[in-house]
Length: 222
Image 1 (cartoon, rainbow, N blue to C red):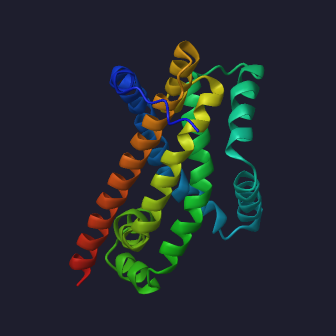
Image 2: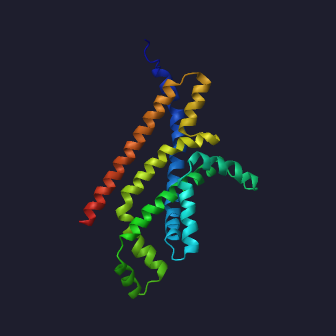
Image 3: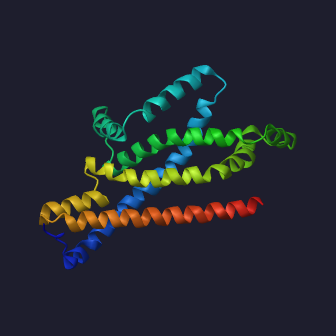
């Protein structure tokens, strides 16, 4: 039985390249999360629309996107968009795919948050002369987001751990960087171990920050 073939000097040598790949991973994560948060609000409003001609197709599309793997959606956009004359950089396609996928999940969370806002809040805003859009964005939405921040934070962590799928379309993020190092040097233990450590550190760090934010909001509510 042999031990693990670990070379510390090699691990330190490739660490800068992996950290550079981690920058692309974080970029894709943050960009996808921000876009997903914005799209999620719109999807939630469409699904809860009063007109069934709008709400039913919206819910069907959401169910379809949530029921199919991200990898299939990524390949579909990556290869289908050029076929209709729309060529986008791979990183843009990756961010778009992750954004749409997670927007569909976030939409249900937004709907739950909106349901917690009392109707009296809207009536009070209307009596003050606020328009419908102003009421939603200035009164309703801030109250709806506060209780769902922990769930949105969980989606951020889930999305971060989905970014390795972007390597399927040759986006050189963290995992793809490790694969390239392995194929060039025929050493896989160090790069993949370091990738796991980096993902773990970033995930735990994000979870810690979210827990601090949740506690701070809880104190403010008291």
